[in-house]
Image (cartoon, rainbow, N blue to C red; front, top):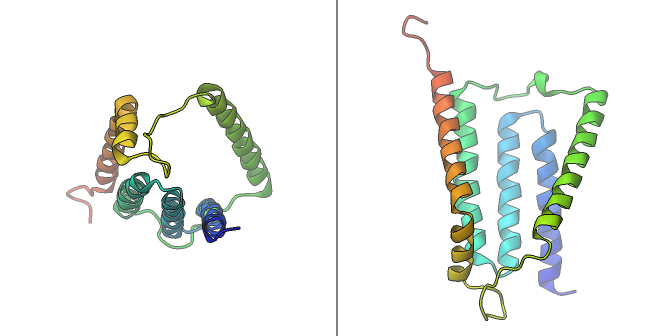
Length: 172
């Protein structure tokens, strides 16, 4: 085993462990911070795969924008910052959630393999991987509309959080 393989395994364990903590913690701000760890470790995995462009997009867009948007949403809607008793689920709810998550993951994996199993993206002649130009061209030629729809959705979520947090003029 090489050092890169060991580091890849460690970053994978960190990503999965912090991902589990995102969905199991009872404090909303801690969940957002664990999401930063998860997304940061995924960016590290991209760096180890010689996909520097994708790694920096991961850091700038997801860690830098999406998590900040989530934190602003928490602050603007006056969501509970500390321990939230409402987030505690019974054993039956946890089992139902686990079964639903497993079924959803199975459907997603089967759908992705069926849709993209034989698809290949030509990224150039570089033996270390593709160039940033080729990756960007493949991404923004085929996926520019979903990318823009997501940005409008995030903007709508931010505007909605601001509207929900506004107080009425006569309210103390």
